[in-house]
Image (cartoon, rainbow, N blue to C red; front, side, top):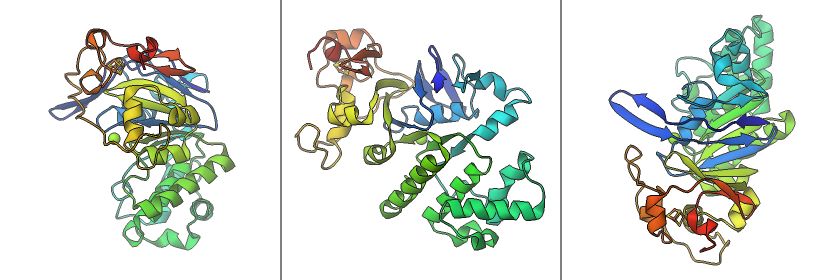
Length: 318
Ligand code: SF4
Ligand code: MG
C-alpha cells in the first residue's frame, strides 16, 4: 500500500516564472499495490502537481508521501533516493515533447539503464531495449529509428518502454493518452493494463476524461481546486456519484446512464485557484448550495460508503 498520509500537501505552490499555480491542499489518498487510482478534475485543479510531487519533481511544503513504508520525500534527498527513483517512474502527457528528437530509440529507452548503472555492456543494453520495445508492442528493429519516424501512439509506447526500463513498481501517468487520437487511445490504455497485470504495476492515473478513467481505474479521486472532493471505487463512483461536482462531470459524458438524466454540459467556469471561493469552493457552480456552503468548508468524510466532502450529502439533502 502506498499511503499519502494526512495532513499532507498543505499549500503546495508550484512556482513558474512570474506565475503561481495549482495549489494543492490537504490532499490525502492511498493506492493499493497492483491497482490503479485515477485522479480526475478539470485543468488547473492540481492533478499534475500531485503527480510531480509523487515523483519528487516538487517537494511538498507540508506532509509527505509514504512509498512501501518509507518517507519518499526524505529518501529522494539522500544517495539512497536513487534506488527509490528506479521504483517510481512517470509517463508524461505529450509523447512529442518528452522524447529527445536527436536521439535514436535505443538511446532513449536505454538511458535509464545506463543512468542508474543497471546495464553498461553495449550488447546487453541492446538486448534489453529490444525486450522493452517488444513488451509495448514495438519491434526491436525500431531501436535505430528517431522519434519523428513514429506516430503519436508509437511514441507514447516508446515513453512507456523507457519508463519500464528500471523495472519500476509504481507509475505516475499524467494524462498519458490525452494528446493521442481517440482511435489510438484505447490501444495504449490496453497495453498499459496488460503491463500492469504482467508486472504487478501500481498506477496513479491522471485524466480529465471520465471515459478513460472508467476504462482503467479501480478507484477514482475527484479533485476540485486543489482538493479531493470525492474518493470512491470506480463502480460506486459511476453508479451513484455523491458530490454535486462529480454528478456534473458524469452528466456531461455522452451515454452515461447512471441517473437516467440526459447529457448536460459542465456548467460554469473553474474559479481562479489563487483566489478560491469561501466555504465549499464549488458553491458558485453548485445547484444545491446554501448559506452554510458559502461559509463553511466541507471536510472529506466517509458518507454512504464513499469519501465525500459535501454538506448536502452529509445533511441528506441530496
Ligand atoms: Fe454544493 Fe454545498 Fe455540497 Fe459544496 S457543500 S458541493 S456547495 S451542496
Ligand atoms: Mg495537467
